[in-house]
Image (cartoon, rainbow, N blue to C red; front, side, top):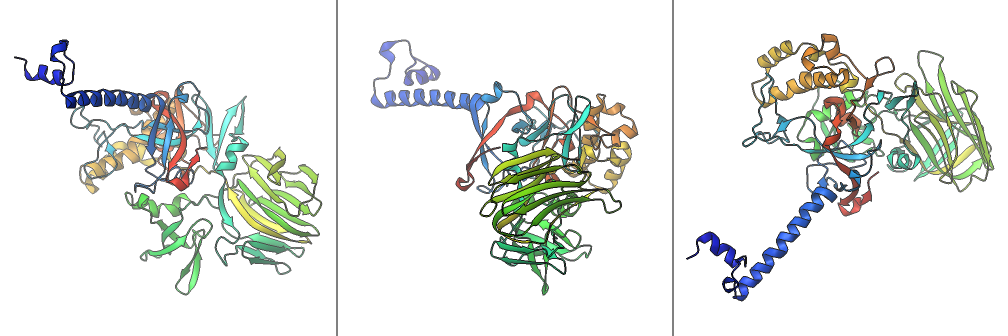
Length: 545
């Protein structure tokens, strides 16, 4: 008599004896069902491993390109292309999914994860009880293996042929990376333009009339590296210590809010402290209070333009970079007339000159300074591009103004900025990393043993030391105090070099991104594939650039 195991295979029709094959109809159906699903599962696992995989964006580090949120339907669901990545070399600026290179285990407190190494150096993972997570992250490839680089003023510089040059993005990619920080008419009544006594500016809907009157009309919204998702924000007066108050319906292009009989603007970080109130922030309450500290940097890569509805006489758009403490400056002046345009430079941009003859009324026109180049577009087509002296926006404050004796009417006038990589992590000093024993002693007195202490020690000491060990190619335990705490890759005097097989991955939402500045370089074997499509929510469908 067959045992239970033999009987099971008989039911599935796996017996070698034809007389024992199932004859009952339900057994034949069970056989076909199992056979079809086994093949389907094999094919599905093969496609997932070698072809494409669905991945949900859990955090805000790649916003606004990819929206991230732990709430279902709030974060983007993307398809990752693993197949072509096996035959295509990773390119700079690729949006790439990779396995997080820092060892982590599941957090018993309900958080996303916790370090797999305790503050006192003990490994906490166990292959059976507490396996390493190996979670997937998504960032943009910024530095390739073996490259020497530094990050300054929001831009990435590479040493090429013995000279430092800005890492420029292809024009078609750059078009997808511009972030609108002002849009005329987006918030009724919001008009951040101030005219000198002889001039005037009028805004009706998205229609703006500019009359400099021989003087200047200045853009008054601070050109900081601010990013906030549209929605609710908590605000309070800076340094007041008061409770935060919720304001709804604000965003990058709708910054004004009512306050105690007056009003404020989320761009004015000198007067207001901000805290975001999206569910993506709820797992880390300090994210809100970090906004004022991390988004104070000024951004100089800008584009200004709109549709010309009327031009009377001569009207000039100026992009200025001015050092408040010296006479050094850069001024780009785009003079507009009904029958053409003329571009000239002043200061460190002296000698720059270009012009074009074409009707401008009824046409889109814009002027950009991007990655050390000046670009003019008319009617959506590029009509001029040339190199121009690079200025650090944190030393040479950017400004936008209109001047001239004529007047003009524009619709949809907008100001946009590029990605801006904030100075933090390896780009900044890490004083606590110089003395691990002292920091551990302090944490032992202030923080109970466990996950909280391990997290703080990892961010203050262990990760900074490990990143610097990668840069200096020596064991972390052999670093001197100065080597463990210095800033690297923060300027031409202190460059950094990526490891031979390591990629530097940074988030587009640079101030609030946990990325390679904190935990170092991603080994080539950790790469999983390229982000290809956003497929959910339906209104967000797009090709990832």
